[in-house]
Image 1 (cartoon, one colour):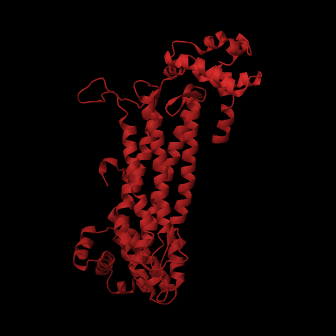
Image 2 (cartoon, one colour):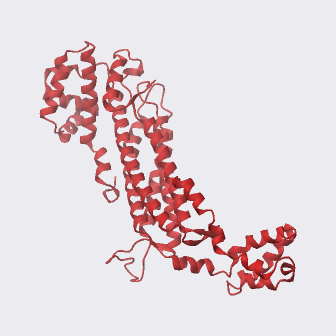
Image 3 (cartoon, one colour):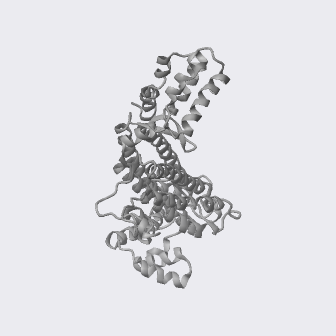
Length: 437
């Protein structure tokens, strides 16, 4: 993974040292269970744990040197352990296959990564909620197709984001539960040479569920769903990032990323304040989503197993989780420090001569007895004059002067339909739905 977009805690999960530590725990716990069943001597398990207690350092370079000869990573690790533990090490890995170690280890790593990502989501949700309440009733224009539609509040925009990321959290919790399974079932998953109770013991020690049918490997539909979930979270990150990018455009400038003292926006133009963080988030989201299709293609392995998935997962496991961890942290910082400009929001809302209230007049005309078709025609012909004047004309005044409209609505009734607060009557209801308060 690119160090620029990595954070230490998540990166550490994918370091070789952590991987080998998990491998040792799998092997040692399995040896414990085998000893309890009388398959191997108790002294074998004790020898492993005694060595581990006094020599916890993992010599990654030494293991790599052995692998350069064996061309097999698990054998290289077992050989390295045996060199230190001695004769009792021969009882390690009894009845197990490499996949028992590799797949169970990956389940642990993905579980560890999930816990960090869930904490990231909690931090993001907290930041969004705080800013949503801060701007609960800050008026701004809602846009459809990028065009002014009707008034909303900036708090509602953020409440929408909160609800979306709350769904992301629920999905990730489910994905974590689904991915956290242990397989210690031996060749082709039949338990022919190892008792299922060994698998249950290792699973309990590592905080995993047992894989009902492992076929030597854990079925990759679990992994496909996990990485698909990461892809959806990345898409939600991008959606909020794109919103900020649009709001920061010079012509809009309703909100913008925090611009720190001494920060530079352009090597050529000193005036520039660019949305570089949210643009970066768009790019990072693409990288996380790039893991989804390979993860789905990994589902179709040959018969009971092959290793076509292995090289893929060595990329996407670290890359997707490290990138998403960084992206969630970055987005939390963006929202936490987001500069919001209510005055500019109101200026933009008002700039088109009251067009944003057209629906209320349309509905009032229909309730006054005018057909919907005629009501639409009366309002639209005046709205188009305002549009073509770039907001220089007032929709309210044009409607008052329109004889067809005036025949159905008094001047006061028309003015009443231009009350901004009308649009925010249900903000509390929506907030209660989103935040449960």
